[in-house]
Length: 474
View (tube, rainbow, N blue to C red):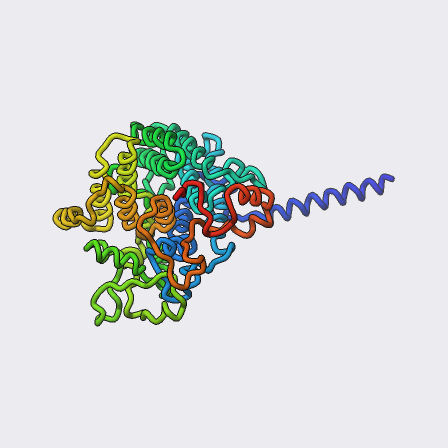
């Protein structure tokens, strides 16, 4: 009996020893046992910029949908010939990387992350959720990161929840609440983060304006009357500035090895119509010098029709967007001014909508290096550019669409909301003349979270590109 007990004891000790050995083997000597808030913040800023500005969610989808860019070969996405595997990265990176890491910061004890870290993380998480709901509609929000199969919340619930989250973020942010490192955008300047919070609150107020005007008005008042204010100059613009390869702008990296995009003919034609000097920033002259002018590519063409336009006879996007250090602009001063113009036009806030509109266009010109006052005034004084108070959506929508060039996800959202400019689907497009109104849910949601997915689709409408989202009422 004693012999048997000895064998059992020896066996148990052997298992324990093996387990300890395996634990040691499986440890990464280069990894920290406890994640650090500065590193998580740096990572989410870089990954968020890549997600927003990169190929899958920007120039291979939303930039095509709003006809900022066009495909000159491999034209399937430009003709909306896509599947539910096309939009996986926004969902997966949004949830599994950004929201997960930001929740880690939010849930840290104060010794690991002071209130400013948590306020910044809550702001970035709100921005991530906003991208997700703008693109897909109903999404996991309240249970995201808490359950393996989270329920979806309606778009109304997400927007209203985000207004509360941003209010909380604002309460956490204060100059005296601790230093922040790892901030590659604002370098720890809490006053700028507070302005971003209010600018996002104003953005959401207008998202809900056609559905919940009373709540939208209050949200606009809250955002603009808060002591921290909204963006007041281009220096406040929320942008991630890239460096050299391999940490360069995603569009720059793409064009180093590929040549399948052009600026859209729709954009080029509009900028020529308006004598808009941003054309020289937004586009390059064709490499065939005999062409002598900017030529956009048609959207929604077949591969053969797109190719026949001529690679050397059409304009690539401007070098401003294709250099290694080109910034990923995520929330601009120009956008905030357009939002103030619309809020004033709707009667939500005091102020001169026309003046905000002019200031917004001026800020966009300045953002792209056009600062000559005479050039700007000549542009603003054209009858075709002047503010139309009887149709503010057309004036603001058209100019906002131009100013958002390169920011596909938000350009797509604002174009759906304001319905200007009027865009026409290309001849080879596959949606019976319609343009997309949303992204497909990833196919994995059907297999891994099927009950929640089905409930969301039943409430929102079929999981189609043409199903209009809650905010999109026209």
